[in-house]
Image: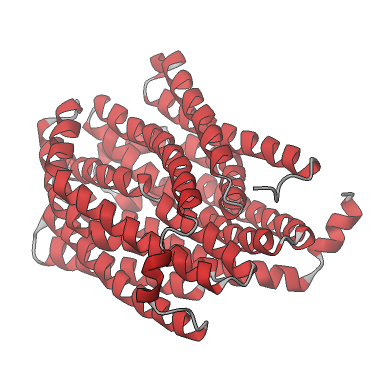
Length: 449
């Protein structure tokens, strides 16, 4: 495809409208997620000791590890739903949701049952200070009760997005985070509940989002005249093998992803309370990058899944070009933001001078992150929409190996080695998926299951 052809595609206003109608609601809603993290950090960060912030970082990382490991519920649901929608298969559209809800509830109950063992195992292996571990365990023991709502929300978000509806997921996420932010202020500052208050705010917010999401799904169900849920129980095994295989591959991918992020948090704790607190602040900014770019990745999931279901190669190629154009603009804007205002943003989050000074030392790594990481997010969206879990799994495994190799090779650099490893991790994810897409596209096998 020559440059003139690409310019012609980018001049198509309908293409940009289609992409932005899906992407912008998800970008706006996703930005509220790290904003929640920033509010948590700001509220807890202005308490009298750094170990409150370190404890919340440690406890929330444990919850995030479990929930993100189970994030395949959203990703697989989005891809399979979008393909069913593109193929106009209403029966399969309904079956995908039924399967997803059943799996979400099953995993939530198992997690709640075994959470004391998980907490004992993880905290016993951490080298963080006793104060940080105490408050981390306190946060975890409350937040665990949000599991049923949080996992069901994954399925609801994925299903609604797969039906090309980005507004309902947007409001779902906005409601969750708005409720969480308000209750953070009430519970932590107003009532003085500190770490437990921050955790309880998240629990209540997840259930509020679930209630709204179920209403949206019910409305979409009726509008599309889908079959009665009870009639689907006999069909729940339809395509179950593919569903399980896809979820297995995405789970293994998520396991590698969380191994890298969890190691960064816990290894940072070994460098002292100020470093783990500073990393928590900077990781909140990294989440801004991730969630902003994920908005366009979500759009890619829906567009690619629909094109794959309809087997429309032309529609897919145009969507890819348009999404990469907008993704590049976003990452340039984020790079400029952190380069010009990063130091001021750190000071907004915490007024603990040691944490501020430490965070500013490692800020240049964050400035470089958007331009390096944009590609892996967009390629993730493409492969999720195409339900190519095996390729995603392999790419993430290579990236994880590079992450750990980079850290141990440069471990004398201390916390700088952690950030160098994370930058390498993001880079290799984009490179490997890009190579795979190029090969499959030119071999005419991208649509082959």
